[in-house]
Length: 63
Image (cartoon, rainbow, N blue to C red; front, side, top):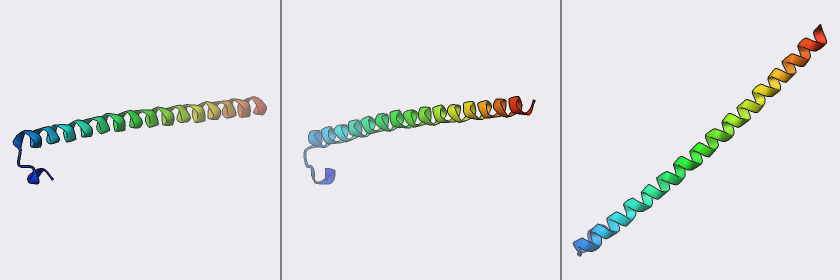
């Protein structure tokens, strides 16, 4: 599409808009990845806490 554009100013503006769109998408992807990493960390923390509780209950029952 850009090759068909004869106007250099229009070509520059289109290129700028495309780069801007890609930047916005990259930011959204980074935010989503951070959310997913936080969710995984929270889930792992819950699993660790449950394992600790189970271990403590097992030790309590054995003594």
